[in-house]
Length: 333
View 1: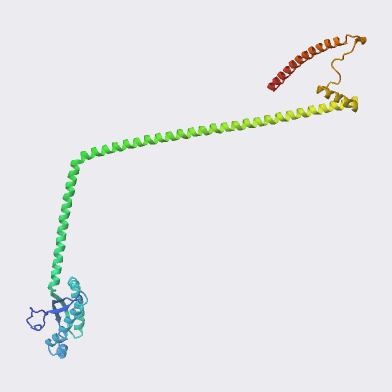
View 2: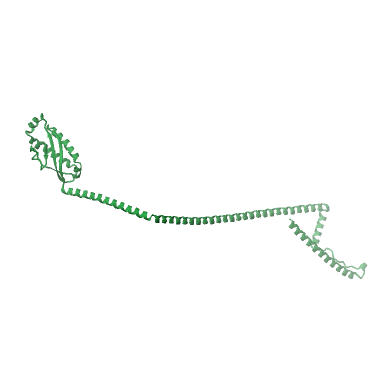
């Protein structure tokens, strides 16, 4: 066994010149580590080794010392200090494989490679120590916090249990108030809906009545128009019929009397109808040429006036009866 350590040397003293290996990590820290290397030279290979190196000290100084020191220095530069410390076992196995392969070329068997004490930088160790202390304090604080939380939950649960009757009472009161409010809202909503329905019903009734009145007026107007049309048609037919009848009578009279005679009769009727006298009412003349003609004329005149008054009175009665008959006829129609 060969030791790369300042404070340790084997009895064979082949490693008395070997010292602790100083390496530098990728993050710039320098630290020391002790390494032990176990080698074996088979009996049949010993002559070759002695022939090549002359003695064991030369083998150590020429092969083992540079190989092991360089291997660990190269390995340290691939990682930072923390990672190197954390992966110590893996670094040791990698070094064993590499060194065994190199020694095999020199007919030496690398039995094992062991990493001893690692002395990281003091500043880094202080940082790691502070970090660890902080982590432990954090765990402690977390435990204390959980304890306080649990105590708080316990106190809260205890207080809640003590207040449970009041809470139940308050909850019941809130539910009652909520139900009462909901009832009032429902009543108000129902009243509003009822008013709306009644208003709609009243509006529909008024609309229906208005439509019925309008339809009735339309029907009456149509009926009046139809009646007026029928009456007009009937009156026109009557007038036409009367005209046709009078024309036929005139035609018959003309044929019976002759055109000239009928014309004379129509002229006389027209003159009589307009009150035009063709002869005097009283003709004064002496009887057989006697002298009583004037007296007879006076007497005749008085008698004529009385007859005219009687005829006028009779005419008014006839006219009144005629008007009354027309009114009755119109009412009957």
